[in-house]
Length: 222
Image (cartoon, rainbow, N blue to C red; front, side, top):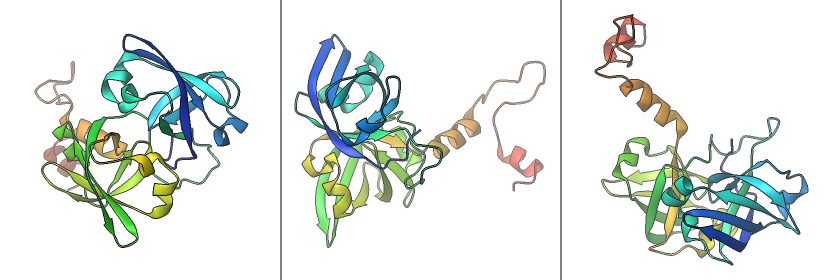
């Protein structure tokens, strides 16, 4: 689990490709002091496993499923990437619960200034993500914990302080670039519980699996 607070910006040194499978060799420094083989690292918000440690960096495998549904497929030698190690149990929880399981990608529609902030407009490729995106709710973009400012039928915006711009890959992003989106896990679980098993019956119990308004009312929640 991660918190969406990027620890450093690393650089892709080499990429091995075989079809839609990749091996990334990533140069890093700040996260290397206690990184071990087998540790989880969020790379642009994608949870990967460090497979080797070598000369101020590490390698990680990218499987085809990840290749197809994230912007890691667009990386090249020299590309910058956000890096965050898995959260320590005794550390500060400065962002929100981030799994490193990207829900989809979006395109940066515009980048505008609002006094001391920079506003990014993101257009998700999958409109189904909008049910998890609410104003003042949390969203993760390329591994960065951010707050949704506004949503429309086709886009949402986030407002970003200069420090975050300067310390992440957002400072090299431009209009038209692809960005990884992970929605708030709480919203995804609530949605799943509300809709799971509709039209089906619990084996041997004769009761629907899903949580309904009647269920909530009968159990003191409404």
